[in-house]
Amino acid sequence: MIAPAAWARLKSGVIAAVSICGGVDGAGATVDKSRTLAGKWHNQNDEAMPRIDDSFQLDQVAVLQGQRPPILSAYAADLGHVVIRVPDGGASDDALMALLVDASAEFGDIPSEVREATRDGKVCTKDRERIVRQIDEAMAALARMRAAACGGE
Image (cartoon, rainbow, N blue to C red; front, side, top):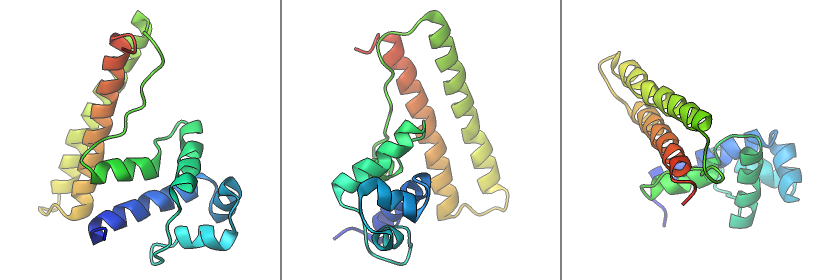
């Protein structure tokens, strides 16, 4: 049995993936399933979840659009990991500099999120989730930079 908090995070990832696919019609077409089933996946109050092969296809649309795969990211987060897209091969000096700028920008988002979360004097679960997401994004940016610096090794 999946813990309720983990299930809620996974369901949020599924809802995000369905939205990225263009809503229930797009998600249904992507995985060749009915609009009704995709609508159940997109409903926070419905327990229906896509099978692993459907989840892969939904996430693939996000990746093709240059976004993070929301379902895979939710699974990884629940296991204490972060999903990192690794660049292809080695990087030029210009590419490394661009990756450094990206990593610096991601790191800069963390204090902004902490400041916003503590503004009212209470850090709620949603605040913590946003902070962790910013930390994960910074770690992913640094991992991409590291992989590029190592030449994809």
